[in-house]
Amino acid sequence: MHDSLFEEPAALSTADVQRRAGALGIDVSRFDACVSGSHPGGTIQKSVAEATQMQISGTPTFLIGTIAPNGDIVNVRQTMVGAYPFEAFKEKLEPLLGGKASGG
Image 1 (cartoon, rainbow, N blue to C red):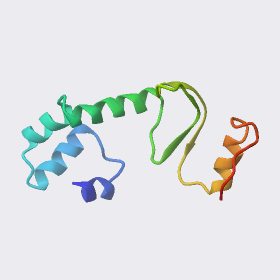
Image 2: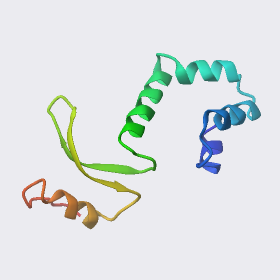
Image 3: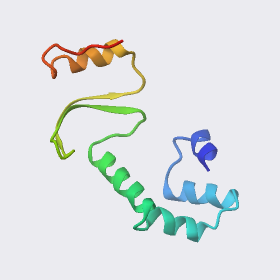
Image 4: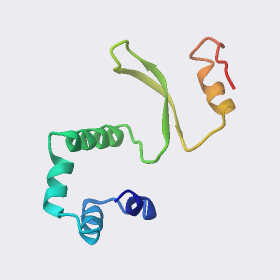
């Protein structure tokens, strides 16, 4: 399934994924129950909903901002979609860290 999803990354509708599951010999009704259920599949749906709410539509996506000690997002100042070199991240992070981003 993993390989199938990456072969056609733009075709991720429910119908597309169900079609692929069936073509791979996966029991589609069990697959649907897994994806929409309350166990790890429910976590997937929650993550997709959060990403949609934040207008995240590509991977990798990096959110530059601050979080509370409990892990809640306080604010997102920048979103970077795609692969970037360290220097691009450093440029975005330094203002948040008071000019103290290091590494390389």
